[in-house]
Image (tube, rainbow, N blue to C red; front, top):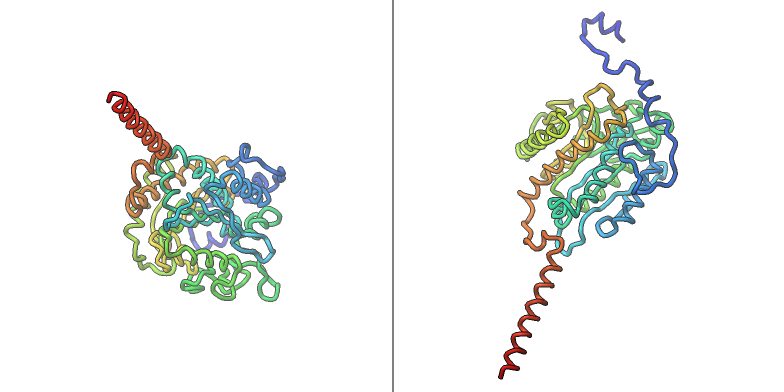
Length: 383
């Protein structure tokens, strides 16, 4: 390859000199440590699917007042895809923020971030006024791993596998790129009809069980959805629609302005640079992506996060970068949520924002009643 590039006078640089060495040093060979406890769960390492299933069940049990765990669907290999619905029960219609991770199997940091995000939202709900308010007015729908078959395959067989594991062309090849399988300018640019390709768009739009399952849930909550977030790596981008055209989406300016401010906040956390822009303009052309599909479904905010790094480690991001990656990404998202709160959510009454407000009001009521009765008794006795 180097000889060919040199012969054609094409400039290049080697970003990863030994990919296999990175794989050998990664968590791929780490054995499952059996049933875990939330108290000791380590969010700073990568976890195989068995541990993530266990973690989801424990999250559901420990935070049952705000979390439900529901079945999204099943994969070709009959693995169950679950999602969380996180929010305070309410009789009112609530807005929705929808997030998925792990569409691409090899992007382990995306899966790690989804777990980090859920943990932070739940542990901060009593101390953080923004999160407390959001949980009253917004339901978060979070899919920690969408491409479960592919994710498992990266742990057992091929660390750099990208697609799902559905058999194609009579079983002569496997896998569809789920982020080229959505019905938005499907298979037009930045993808392939060849089932051997890692960007194979599938035999038809929305052909895959994972895609179908997500679309079904998406359509159910779409009318109340304010924001769609899909998490990937690598490159350090916050991508806006579109990938299939250089034309801007209907809400491009507002999305870009909010994202640029969120990147400023992100940089303050770990001094790391992210770039904001539409996919076709700052990255490459794509079609059939979930981010574009959400924008075409008139979701006001549709962001594709491409997390660390910028190429030094690529998909083999070391575990010691999980924490700073998640911290800076959460910082960015919290700014976006704050913008949503200030711009699109109804203000709550002061006592509603006070978690103990109801108890204080009842206590005050009884004190007033007691004082009133005391005055009446004194008056009667004095007659």
